Image 1: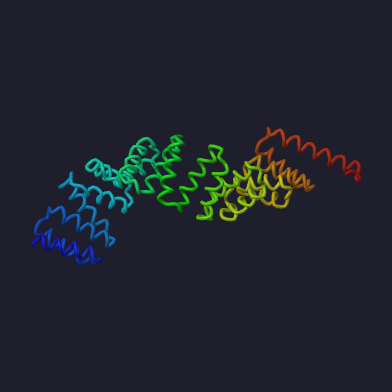
Image 2: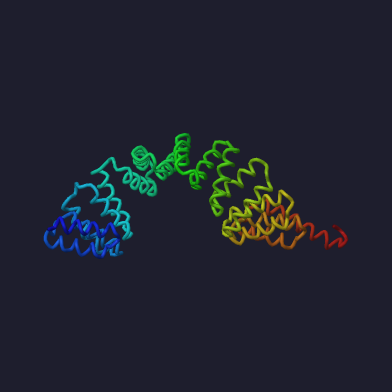
Length: 331
């Protein structure tokens, strides 16, 4: 009778009727309270109904009854994960992996968790295993590339990202990561190609746009550098570093209005930055906004009394003001 009930329950789950399946699994458990298949099945039905807190004790019981059965700890880990207890989830996943070392998906999941915890060496072992066991898993190759990059094994990382892209050519994250690697190796044209593809696929990827801006600056393409930086600050007005670079490149291009606006935005975001105020003071001074320049230099010295450049600049302006008072017709 139980076999029939379990078959009916599985059919109900397969056809998207978890409530009907729940009834069949409960009947099976009344006859055999320690039936692991019924316990995990009822937990799956409860999970499908969004009742994970009720599913958890069933899966804990199943894991105690059948600690060596493949799949039980995976279900328990997924339940913990859904309930937000990632530490317990990873304990369960690790037990599942010890029961079934050839489960590439579980090796991937635990490897990613180790990487996020900062344990790159443990992550490397598991992600290498995941990529070997499931060579068609683009995410496994991508995450393997990320770990190898953090371990500064750049040649191997590039190979991993290339494998990820071969499986998923339109993955903007892999394009960005590989572009970053080429930029690190001074292979600028290849880096530009990859990063531009990443931006085309993910126009709001400010990290890729910042890397593109840096590359354009490296290749002495200031207008293109400024265009990317303008797009970054449009997408993320709180990106202080982009405002700082935009101010510098705009000043270099002689676009003082844009440079000043960018420098002002930077000091609004970083009001305690002496250099930010000093750069803004220089821009004001170059535009003969001398009172504004004095105010900025004074702010620099309030923040950093030993800032020699600000001391010199302020002294120079005070000298000009004194000369003007003595000779109103002086420039």
